[in-house]
Image (cartoon, rainbow, N blue to C red; front, side, top):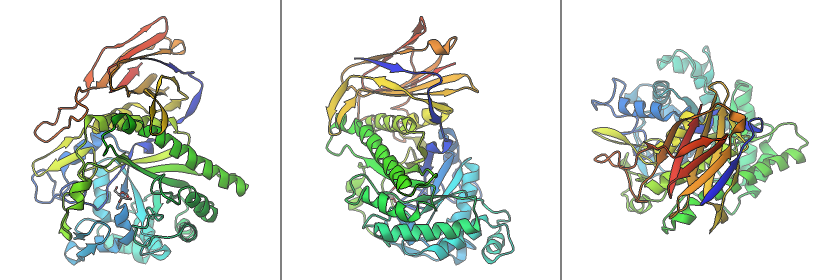
Length: 496
Ligand code: AHR
């Protein structure tokens, strides 16, 4: 198959907000307990933080991590997780039907975030709680001292404020499964008042309002429009969540999921701008795609799980090679919308639908680790408006291009990075790109993620079954780049 990329060095879509490479840790399954926190394990430090996991998170390059939920946050009392561990209450956790010991909480997470070289994105409980508790939490995290909650933090051994800048006003409040689920109007009012009070206390923070839990929600679009009418002036971002499934084993449809993501982003952008027009506002609301990933492999096991266990194996999807291809394609889609998507969180980070898995004896990279790694490490700078001319195939989303691609230039490093996915299941694909504006640039790295078996996985015993390798199928002649991609493959091409 043949395709063409068209670039213009001055046709910049947007700079990449590094928070587009965010991720997510929820109190769920073994994400916290046995994931990032495993006291007594020789792989952990004296605070119980798994050092092998910290190393992999740093390697992955995750500038922001959302915490503590997810559905969990809608029933969470943050005070349960601070102060002396022996006094912390053990509670039934109703989002995931487990026991929460509260051994790990906000201060431990902030300590972990420092080690992992990442910022905290904090969610407040707007399910069973509201503005008062959100204000108290913000006072605890961001106020210097001399007030009740800031002094409580100091009493808990944390002298300096955490200074958390990015806050989620609840989680998936449109979902009937959510504790304290609300109508769009109820949520919009609560978000407006909570946001207003939080910004009175700390005007430097940014706020994310809950959008729809996925594009198939019956209230999708109505929800965004109605709740934004109420809280437009108080919030900075609207959230989007979407998980992708290949439960029916139709890989070409599955790989077309990026077309669905593209449509979702364009729709929410349009609604934000519609409310902007209705309000005659100068303010633009951007997007926080703060839950996205493949999620379906673990559904059956989770349905059979016994209730009220502590940190059971939950949502432990073992990712295949084809999942990594879709993750690569979704990253390309997020970057192609970098003018409006400023934050995005791969959900999640460790053990729970995650790129990193742990056992008592080690940690390893799942297949989806690699496209994320190459995007986060190399696709920084400015996204170029990348026109892709590619043959298409028919999918459940309509036409889906075989080639997904985006180019990101980094003027400081004098580099150009192209990320590409060939979705053809039986043909190689060659794409060309006129690079005369990038005179003197040569291909310095070309990495491919390829495998004959779409269902291949990485395990603790075979951690490198699906892993990237250097290839040499890119060439430049007369200012024209030509790249050959194997059938169903991902590539990162670096030019400097
Ligand atoms: O990431 C797992 C769950 O998916 C989150 O708790 C929730 O927000 C979403 O439905």
